[in-house]
Image (tube, rainbow, N blue to C red; front, side, top):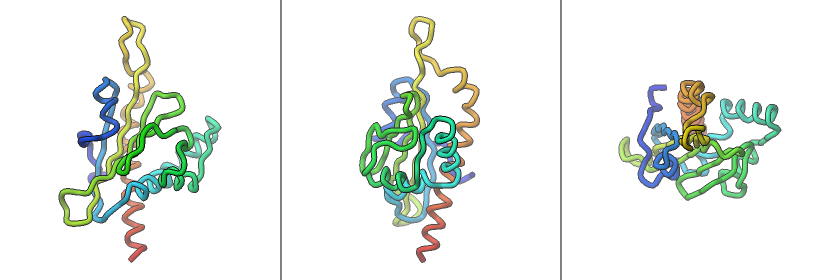
Length: 176
């Protein structure tokens, strides 16, 4: 996944409030050589085969089912909850989702690419993990489970963004 790389949060990123607040936050980015709308990006993200596997696990383990049609409704702004998440904030160029426990955030953003010619789009994907209150003096720290799964999380985040990019590039090829 060489075209998927860690990135600083761009100016105005909805996820930045968590990073500034001391939560773990990451950001990955890639570019695609065509215009991609936020609606198209969100729908593609939540309907990739890799994310469908996550949706299947959420339905089975947590009774939080979802469909591709619901992903489309979420993408177009007609739905404010999807599987285990609800919309925390939405803008024309980005979406910030909160999980049902309030511990994690998922964030998607599109920006017109500065390089690579006209019509390119930079896709951002990031996550935040809000720490639980610690036992010592109220210090908030990421939990042990989070620390143990961080390597997997980083790999999975890159794989998700790569899957979306691949899908969006195939859609362009199919359109002509």
